[in-house]
Length: 240
Image (cartoon, rainbow, N blue to C red; front, side):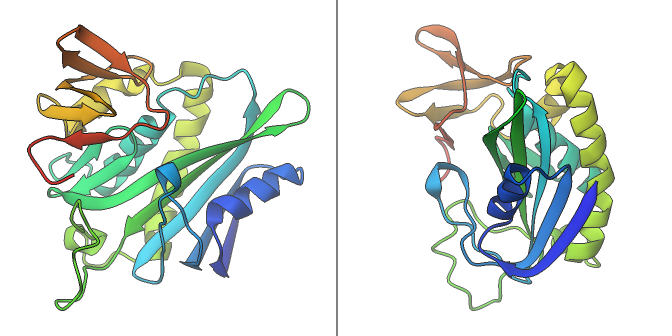
């Protein structure tokens, strides 16, 4: 898989999508600084040398079911960074938490390609350095965690070197096996399991995820499977 590093760009996901539209093959593109990074639901995700921002791009069959891919990616990243499984948790459908605060997120975007292919881009952003003591924390509703709290020697380049092989292996497996094999791995790190949550207009207790990555919401209507789409999960007993 080709590796490309940029000093600055608008968004690594945008760069990766354009690469695929131009007929390019599998690529990992990273940047020291993003000026127009984005998260789910149109949220901004700015990054600089205090964070790691990169995207993994590859053409896949258009018919491939991508359900649960963000959860599987989260598991793969967490297993590399926290192999003991004691400190990093995953919040459905795309966030990583370290010691109860947000460490990073995952954004998957797609684009149609010729010959019954679909371009798939997985954007990953991780905080590397803790916020300065005098930083305004009001913008961090879910808190701010940094990888250097877990690994003081962590750098952007070294972290990407560790993650790249695991992500390549995950994507190879996902094409044939789907999310199913990752269901148990996600359950071990499920931040919301057993807690009251709100997803869109629905409330209930999170009961894990299905074999296709749907949230299983225990509500007045019974166990209801919820797909990610444009919905986000909020824990009811913490700040949104």
